[in-house]
Image (cartoon, rainbow, N blue to C red; front, top):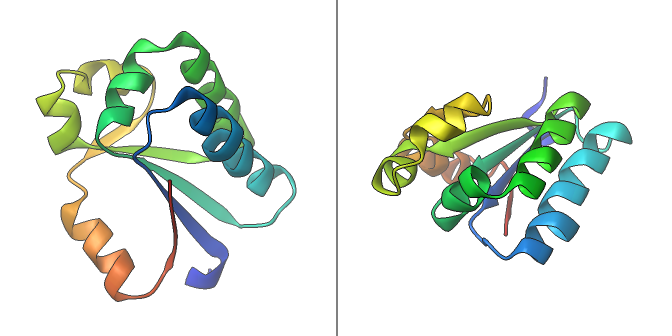
Amino acid sequence: MAETNRLYILWTNADLITSDKMVMMYAINSKLHFWWEEVTVIIWGATAKLVAENASIQEKIRAARQAGVHFSACKACSDQLGVSGKLRELGIEVIFWGEGLTAILKENRCLLTV
């Protein structure tokens, strides 16, 4: 698959409205309407804590995963916030993202930052 049909959403904004009305809405609709072949949401910073603690966001993530959206969290962030285990329980990949994000940026891949 061409990298031009793969979207990465770097989710750093822990605002509930932004999480629901931008990140989740766009990620889910991107898969349901075939706007992007692959969508990966990268959970970074404060959003790791939000995901671990907010049942409404957890439900949106379950719906997004059913639609085919992939979720991955920054391990450094989630470890520092003490939520890595909870994210894994939710079926979210937890990995170090520094090098991966750098590669996305250097290779000019499709990245949406929220």
